Image (cartoon, rainbow over all chains, first blue to last red; front, top):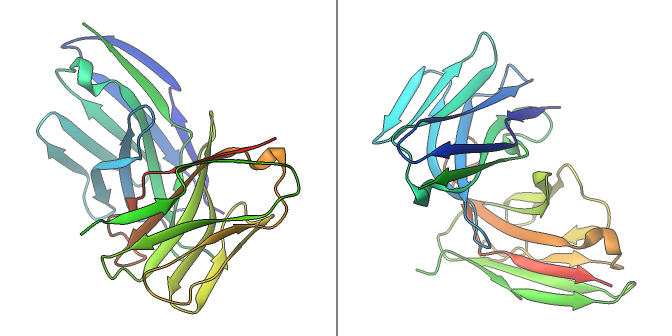
Length: 114
Length: 113
């Protein structure tokens, strides 16, 4: 089945720096890759997603890139702010027996120091 | 429009007890699912449903049952609680299974002692 690996597990940056989180997936049939942000004690919230027919997508300070050949995708946050501190999860849709359910990476805890 | 509503928010169970986590959505979404979240493990799919009367297993279904008698409701039943089921449970819904936004409920914190 699909397997999603996410790195790093923790990331600490200074306010204003950029942060990059990388994920790899195993199933070449996957074609939907969302990123979720989860603050402590809260539910995961979608922040950006990308589909396999697109190589890059931006939304203000957040961007996601996808390399289908290498089966990896990345989240880029520029000009980080303390409120960006949270756990970030990548996910991939798995088109095997589970018919498109999201498979999540294990998360990256991002800390932005003022 | 409340979105995805889960109850209870917190629950303590004794080993061997059974209970039901309730989930309801008011967005007329066909797809609903249950995930559990454990430290360092991300979110793992327990069961899912693509419509009323249709359910299927996810990655970690053992010890859990689900049913989908209506579009709105998707309860998760713990048959005989075990300490290994101590976790945070999230219900989620989407208006399609293939690449539409999945909305999560607020979560249910379950402790089995």
